[in-house]
Amino acid sequence: METYAQALLYAIPFFVVLLLVEIGYGYFVKDQKHRILDSVSSISSGFTNIVKDTLGLGFVLVSYPFLLEHLALMEIKATWLVWLLAFLVIDFAGYWNHRLSHKVNFFWNQHVIHHSSEEFNLACALRQPISNLLGYFPLFLLPAALLGVPNEVVAVLAPVHLFAQFWYHTQHIGKMGWLEYVLVTPSQHRVHHAINPEYIDKNLGQILCIWDRWFGTFQEELDGVPPQYGVLKPARTWNPILINFQHLWQMIQDAWRTESYWDKLRIWFMPTGWRPADVKGKYPVKGIEDVYGFEKYTTPSSPGLNVYVVFQLTATLLLLWFMFYNYSSIGVDGLLLFGVFVFIGIFGYTALMDRKGYAVWVEVVRGVCGITLVVLTGDWFGINRYFEGAAWAVILYFLITILSGIYFTYFEKGTGPKKILSH
Image 1 (cartoon, helix red, strand yellow):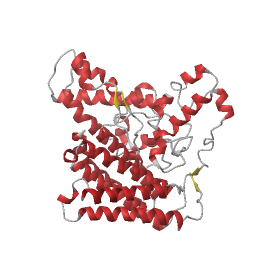
Image 2 (cartoon, rainbow, N blue to C red):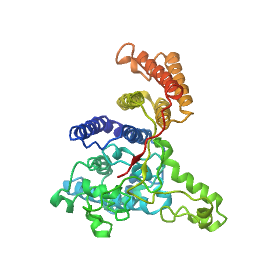
Image 3 (tube, rainbow, N blue to C red):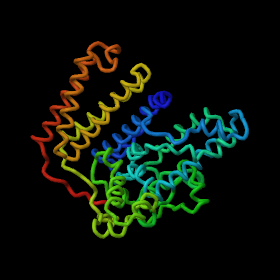
């Protein structure tokens, strides 16, 4: 986990720079693909994911080192050919894991967050799950384990493979010639994120597109079919923590309500979106019927609220960077407490973006608890050793959180949502 935290120290600034470049480019060419609240929601989702992963929250069904130790048929050294082989195996495994997430009800829950944005941009790439609490991906790496691919190779390539999927989440790059036959490109991934009937569940590859071409899931971006983004059952919230569990909650409700014991069991393993017939008729769920005419989710926001949530996003980024930089010195208990503050913070300001009445209580309680912790310990997880009075800056941050939560709840409630059509 510490190695992953160290990798994030370098990856996060790189992602931030690319995001700013995309936003700046969109502004100057007058073709902006970002909406402030949507992008804040997307980036915040990324924050929750990296906190969960760096803290090791979840249950690993089986680890790759375990498979390697018990199943390897041979022992091989890490030559360039082995690195190439491991990359191919990871990408092949990623394709089938991705395909499973699109095809099975239970596994869709941990992937729906990635598709939940109704925009398509680099921020959307950061919408990653916290609901994937059962670690089973190493099972897809059985071929590598059988061949004896060293764990060190897989441990290095896995985050590199993940980070390499960031760049193609953009609308500003067109088709890329002969590369379209080898790599997953922005054009191909726009198809993957689209809800047009022609594009649903297509282009499931992660780095190489050869798997889609071989296994019948490839679809070229069509000139006459502009991609429309999101999910057919919209999330209708900016809160990434809620989005992570919406589909699971729907399945739990359906399993409880259906009178068929067989349906109670099979709902988890049926195709994505399947619901028992008796529940579907009695408790209908409205979805998107016209992919070109639906209203994108939006909530009342002022320039002040926009500035505030960007401030919260920036503060959270700085807190996380501090956390990763001091990962070992903070200690396990400290990291868990730090993570709780980050999660509650994201829940609070995204609930405020949703204009939820309870958001103010989340922000006030978080602020009071944060200030109390600093006062009692005289520090904030060791931040004072970097510059004198740093803990006072943390107190100021929590005071701003409390006052802003109160202001945007009781003094600036908005004038009602604006309609934003998808096309």
